[in-house]
Image (cartoon, rainbow, N blue to C red; front, side):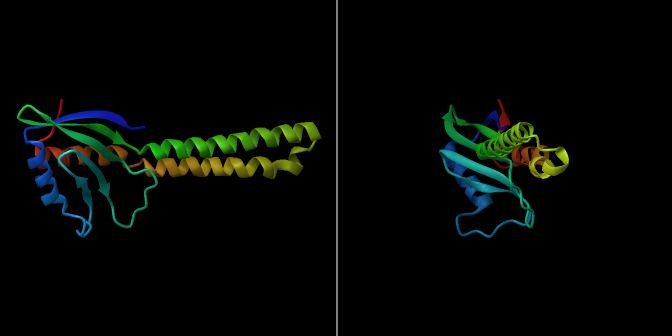
Length: 162
């Protein structure tokens, strides 16, 4: 779900970290109204796009390491949904599929008519539809969020793709 990304900034890692801290603030900072936020040091960073009053189960983020690269910095990491999103979706749809298979097998073996056992099929299918809707809703702004994170790095620390 996340893709690898490598960026290069002309700033040294310590200068990059100071600049990120100045823009993002420290631990006691107030949240921004809307925009890219997160944290960074001279070794790693985690940035995401924040929208107040919007709950996103699978937020897009950049999790990267910062390494010296000549007179600048190399930012290498992954941008996209967190790994927990794939684990959750795999478990959600896997368990519901298993339940559907077992319910279908039980209905066939016991000779239960579809009119009597339709709930065993309808409820997991409705939960699958809900999971699909949740994923779709959470990924509706994915491309814009990723572009905003990369634009933030380009504007703040002059980071460009390699």
